[in-house]
Length: 185
Image (cartoon, rainbow, N blue to C red; front, side):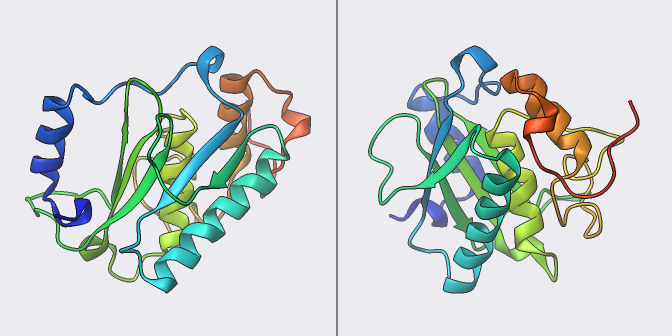
């Protein structure tokens, strides 16, 4: 059975039963400078290219301080796997376009809900999700890491997001890159 065909509830139960319950993002002290990523074979060529575009943009913004690296398989601890979920369980109310699950031992799963995307930009959605992979939290007043999807705000990695990265990884903000003007402090 392919992982991407499992409903989210079954995936959550499987992770829980396997002792891999969702954990909070890693702290700076135990966060690696290389983030291994595996793209599930079920991703279409177009979706794969859009995910890779998000990885290229993050790698450019991180300026070598931290780096996402594509791996062929996720057979070791610490690997993040991006999987498409073709049909998700829909409920009433706002629905997540993607969801990031961190494993206690490192790495995790990013589920991309294809049926919820509509005409939304997958690259922008993945920029946001890769922010979570880096340990970032939602920023209610922010752009990329906002709790709500906005094509305009999620088209690039903004200064406010990079301030979170700098704090999390104990980096100097002037060593990182971002789009737009610096955020007001």
